[in-house]
Image (cartoon, rainbow, N blue to C red):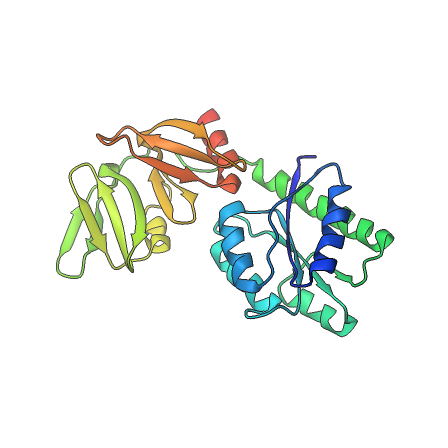
Length: 252
């Protein structure tokens, strides 16, 4: 079993520290910085991409359920598992609104906590089995033409001229060999148009043409960077959740 990256969102310091202590006793758990409110949790999730989040139902600002929904929208490959924590069992039903793996009542009971950890490990093992299936596309697929609307004109592109694409200021920047083209389409829409070709979401904000990847280098928290063989030697992020899939693509 691989290490489990965990994060806590809890505004009460004593309760937060109690849960941190429980998690630190688990040999396969790595704890990341904790959040004290919903917005801080969202920001920390984007930075660390934990496997599981222990989430207080009631928090200042953005409530637990709403924060979980926003995080699921940000997760392009596999959203984290959620364990709701609450002092009132009537709130436990909220856990099922977002398909949470479990819920814990405060104060925490060690036996109940171990049951939750067992569920987490089982769920992660099942997810790992799915991830181990080869990512399906052919990096040598022949390119077809792509029509891109930049708001003023329709640009005809060959997909094999695209290095990568990234959202920027409410537009999508498509970086090609010769120019940067702005489009009103979303990154998701471009990814769908290029489905089956040599493009991969290395990060929630980057779609990369793998035919132009020169090297993959480790970064921090299990993430990596890819360096492209363009004239700038562009370096782009690879999230921790995408890294294993990316490495498997090149192994095959």
